[in-house]
Length: 397
Image 1: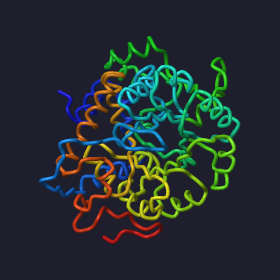
Image 2 (image 1 turned 60 degrees about the vertical axis):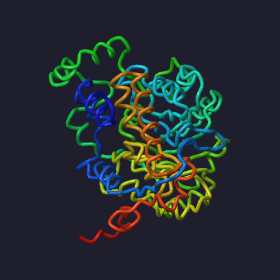
Image 3 (image 1 turned 120 degrees about the vertical axis):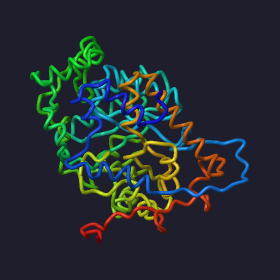
Image 4 (image 1 turned 135 degrees about the horizontal axis):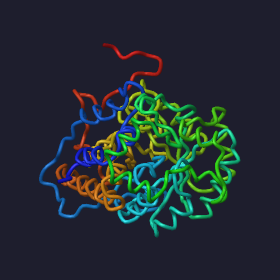
């Protein structure tokens, strides 16, 4: 019986070849950042209040003039077609069914127009990686705007890809190179192999201007390695604003001063994120970085969070510490691996029910009251949350 995100994680591990599972589940280098994302969440305690009227609970939140059924959405994840062919559209459709947005990655295996059409409604956002050839970004934004994508998410924490040792040891490359080890790995997962045989090997297709166009090999390699335009700076946001007239969200913020700069440069929202522990292994957890960023922003723009969210309690913890809403990545991929669109729907339903249950147990009647409730305070050994080390300063032993 699958009743927790960990259950779905174990089931995904049983259904996927090792090299695929470790691609979605792994982090950078020693994976200390990956582990900190969970450890710091779990150290935060929530204090309930009793004898409160929670007969009716409103879990919805408003974001950029749109109503979400619950304060979470699907984070951008690349190469979803390796988990299940057509995975991008399945994720988008499941999010639409659940009343929350889906963020399509630049590194998707389906085109923005195709995903939007197959979702049949709902709200889709676009995540952008800026490659060295900025013309690729320009045509993608033009197409996405025309297709009806509402919000642009600029990922800023990938000037170079993190060193993911698991992927390196597994020889993870696109296109796949068949080795005896890989063949044995695939043979042990016949269900996955059959789906891939029918659906075809995943390709990066979203940056090609026309469906029939093939991306140059160096662009595909850069997408897989997350090798982006290292000359992108704060002033570059002016260039983006000339291409995109909708809300612009900056993803990958961990320093309070960067959040302040985002406000100063007219960004409409920030996502506190360490890329799920897949970039700088020495980075703080996202939840530890959140309070200082929320305080610095001071409510001028919405602050979101991703990296490490696994339960309804985690969503409440993030809200208490200043997040307006959160984004989830790996949990949705576990659901995709287990059951396609229905598997993702099940995971989102689990999170929504768990979130509402936690509100009731805390004595809160709405998502909007979480951050305001003085009684629902997070604490860890007498402080509000795990505190990240200051930039350039070691944490005392």
